[in-house]
Image (cartoon, rainbow, N blue to C red; front, side, top):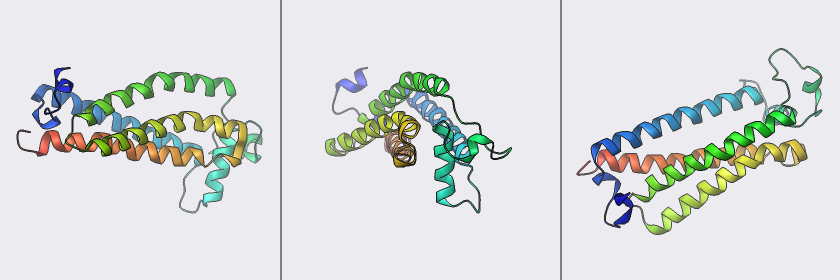
Length: 179
């Protein structure tokens, strides 16, 4: 924890074992985020000829019980709509795991030489993106197409902000003098 105590200490000055640990954490985080993209692709059923309206409809059909034709069985490739109980279970686990990822990545980002204003902005964006993405399935569940846009927008914000929170420290750790 002494790395956080001194304002002069930066990511590049971390001991090699700490850099390896943070790098491994970021690698596993990237793998987890890629798996999220894969799961999202299964829900919206990306395809070369899929229109944005179809993708949107698939999202609503998955998260809102009884919405649209897919709930009646639109085909073999269609995932079954998620029951409310299962959505609650997924949310429950994410309410414990996502804040931990945010905490670790935020601390790692705080070790960088980025200015205080940028740190505040990126960490605030990450907090907002994480919170919005945690409630996004519930927005679709309760309000359907009216708030389904929250899901992809919050997911993009989460991915972009986490990429910055990981990318800047990794760059500074391994590509600056002393790294």
